[in-house]
Image: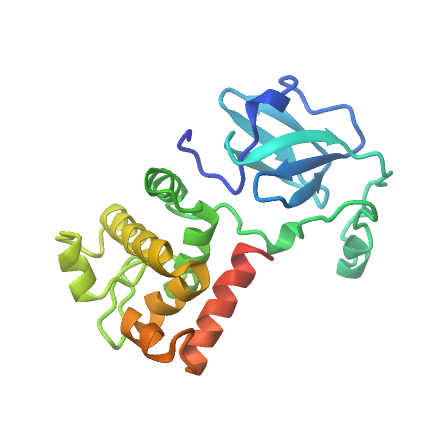
Length: 228
């Protein structure tokens, strides 16, 4: 995967030019099975720039989206400073859409997250959601239990992955992703998140997500950010 600050990625087979598409709207089909309605897109080297319907642009990578097709449902231009309810009412009736506001925005350390996620086979959007909940992207964050840095590594986790400085963003993210990947491989995503928060022993002891309010809220928050 091209290392870029990204939210999503667009397959090269559907890149049709260097200017914004003339279609009034387009549907982006993600490899995850979700879709996103946008105003148009243009290519910039190995990346795509997508014009959001609510205004503004987002730069995408080129590996997580299957195709882009014209959206045949008419979408009038939004009025200045539209009411949020009016934006919601623009949802395409024929196809499921992703709420743009629910997706994770371009974040700090995006290039590191994308590169390390790709290297370890983890969805970068899941990693972004976890970091947002764990530390809100504060590299010097430290919890009362001793968890450190962006992905809140516990001292034993830092030692296990040979992290000399857990407050170094690159080292912290790399170790956190490796830890998350090892949990996902054994437990699946939901239980992996629970184990990341409460410990793998607690998940095994309760044979599922532990009945701790903190852990249940933690898993719910990350999943809602990952798949809004």
